[in-house]
Each structure stands twice: as C-alpha cells, then as structure tokens.
Length: 581
Image (tube, rainbow, N blue to C red; front, side, top):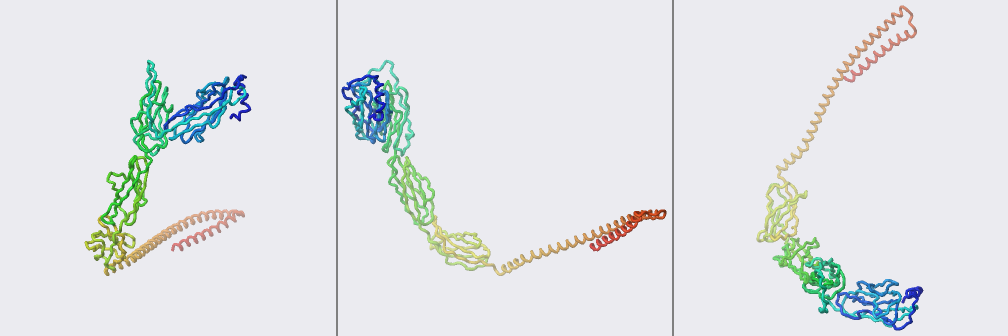
C-alpha cells in the first residue's frame, strides 16, 4: 500500500517523527471491533477499525475492508476519536462494492498500545443471515524513519443477522448508577411523521415505509421497532442516533411503529404510529348474469363479488362494450344492473379496487335476444285521400306495434297499436293524408322494453277524388294565368302612365318654347330698334360729312350682322316648334 506516495512518504514520516529513530520490535495487528454479535433486520450498529501495536510505535496505517452488501449497508463513516491525524486520502465506502478504504498518518511519536481507533462505520442490517467482514489488504508502518511495515495479522468479524422487523427478546440492562440530585426530565414521546404512510387509517401499496421524528438536543439514544402489536415497548437498547428510518419490503398487514428517545435522565415516553400495507390485488372476481324471464329482456343484472384479505374491497369500475366506465360501490347485495341495451352480443368489463388502490379485472359476455319482427299481411296499394286506411299484420302476442309512416320528403308519422293474444294487429289511419306515395315499417316492443328489428317496408299511394283533381287542376291553371294577367295589367298601366306623362311634358315644352320665342322676338326687336337708331345717326352724319372708312365699314357690318342674327333666331325657334309638334 501507499505505492503512489513512495516518493513523498519517507520525507513525510521523517518530518513527523522529528528525526527520532526507534528500532523495530514486535508486530502490529489490524482488527475489527466488536468481532461478533447478533442484530435484527433494520437495526443499526457501529463497527470500529482498530490497530494494536503494544511494543512498537507506529505512525501510518492503511487498509481495505470488505462486507456482504446484500446483508449490510453503511450509513456513514466517522473519523471522530481516530489516532490518524493526517489523511493521505479521505476514508471512503461503497455499498455497491461492499468495501471501505482508508489511509492516514500518526504524528510523532506515533502510537503504541493495544486498541488504537482508526475510524468507525455505522452499518444497517438489510436481511437475515450471517455476515463476515474481512480485511482485503492492509499495512502498518513503524515509526522508525524508514516506514517499515510491521503488520503481522488482519482480524475480521462475524455477525448473526436475525429475521423480521420485530423486537428481539428484551435484555435487562445493568443497574445504572444513582442519579444526581437534580434529575433530568425524560424526553417526551416524540411526534412521528411519515412521508410515505402519513395517514394511520389509510392503506398503501408502498411497502417501504419511512418514518421521521424530531431530535432534540441532549438525546443519547433512539430505540424503535415495528410489529403488529399497538402497545409494544421497544426496550432500552439504542439503535443509534438518527432522525429517520426506512424499512424495506415489509409484508402486507396492519403495523405499528414504536419509538422512544433517551437522554442523560433515561428513556422517555413511547410513541405508537400505525401504518397499513397492502400490495396484493383483489382475488376471486366473479361476474355472473342473473337469470332473466326471457332472453329478450334488454336490461341484465349481474352478481359481482370479489375478495381481498388485506385492506378490503373499495369500489368497482364497470363499462359495457368499451363505453365510458362508471364507479359502482357494492351496497351488500352484490347486484349490478346494466343499462337498457339493444339486442345482440355485449361485454361487461369490471375492474375491482381495494382500499390501497390495487386492482384486478375481469369480463363477462352476454347477449340479448331480438323480438320477432312484425309482418304486415294486408294493406291498400292505392287509396283515395280521406278514406280510412287499414293495415293488418302479425307480431309477438301482446306486444306494442309502432308503425312509422314516411313521406317522400323524409318526414315521419308514428301510429301505435297493440297485438292481441293471437299476435294479430290492426292499424287504422283515419286522418286525411296528402296525395303522395308513402312507405311504412313496423317494430314490436315488449312491456319489458325489448324491441324488434323493423318489418319489411311496404308502399302505398294516396290519390285525390275526381272532383278534387279537377279543382286542383283548375287551381293549377289559375295559379299560372292570374300572375300573367296581373303582369299585363301592370304593363298597360305603366304604358298609359308614361304616355300621359310624355304628353304633358310636350305640352309644357311647347308652351315654354312659344313663350321663349315671343320673348326672343321682343328682345330682338328691341335690339334691332336700337341698332337702327344708331344707323340713323350714322346716316345723318353721312349727310353732313364724309364718313370715315372705318365708320362706313361699321355701318355695313352692323346691317349684315343684324340680318344674320335674325335669320339664325328664326331658324332655331322654328326647329324647336317642329320638335315639340
């Protein structure tokens, strides 16, 4: 061992021993303490790894210890009280490999003695059997300045592990010394809680219950046990200093966890915490159809039973033909009545749950027979509207007959009657039906709700009498002619209205045009008069003097323009009068 520290170990030992050299003498031993013992499943205990070197000072030790991982598990390692002051590597353990490793150094002048504690491991018992713990390897180095390995012997330990989680026989503790005058108050019964089984009245599938409790200052011991007795005293042997504990793979049943705490004054009150475990599904699920009066009865009852030796039956989930399931709780008569169903084969699916949520499932197949379909034997193929329609047939005796009368547009009319003791029935339709072709089918229904398939479809036509046919034909023609006549009348009225409107408009335009022509004549005459007056002035001036060339040209131009304007006005007025006329 210590191979990876060969280069530095001599110098480290040299410094720790302060240059003191002690000749080699007796051999050293690595051993486990206690070497044997008996512990129950779930109990914890502490095992020390010690060194013995009565005649030789040693200053370093290392080792590897193996333990059966299927029977034991390590809760923690402790270096408290160790003679090793310097750890070359921190002590480690593995519950997967079942091993402990440690390497450390003791300062000068080293250790000499029969029981030097190196470290301690707290184990918990997982299952019953025997457990052998052994050193796989180890070394103890002398405090001689040369690191001489003086290990001569490796001693392991063997333990007997008892079965169950019940308390072993109580061992009477040895007499305790007298208490000091001021006695310390005993711990109160601790308040136990469980994150896995919180309700003492409820049943759980989880068979690994975990419990926790407060850990006040000054507690020197914790004692607990689980069994089926609600009043067990867990005893006075401490199971270690811990705040919680979890059992593994506890059997089904009603259990009680008992816990008490110890301080310097002694053991305090006991807490009894109930918990219930059920991991077994219900058994013997029976689904038996109850006998019916007839196979055609559409509502079937079932006798449903199951057994559960643990928590007991809680409820059932039931569905028919894979429809949505519903919860059913047995009132004690074990009778479940399925909903009314159509004829044919069906499946009743049942799941039964116990109080812990365990479930079992089963199915039962059953069938509902179909009523014989009615047979229509006599009916009219053609019938005049308003006449009584008689339809005869045969069906199951005493059954209700429902005739469905269907028109071409898809609308339905239902007519009911009942078959007599011989199974004959007559359906009478006395209302006036519109003239159309009708189809009809009939179904039979028993008093218990069973229903047959529809009968074969029949067809018949309803026609109108000759009088009604003539009247309908007349109405049909009138329905065509009257709208046409109405349209013609409206068209004539529109034409006449338009004619009179146009005529009135022409008269108005003619009157307005004449008035405009008269006003234009008057305006033009006034203009002509003024122009002539101007021309007369020019003519008078011409008699006195010779007109200038521009004045002469103006006189001629004015005369010509007056003539042109008069001609244009007369032409336009004449055109307006022609258009109006």
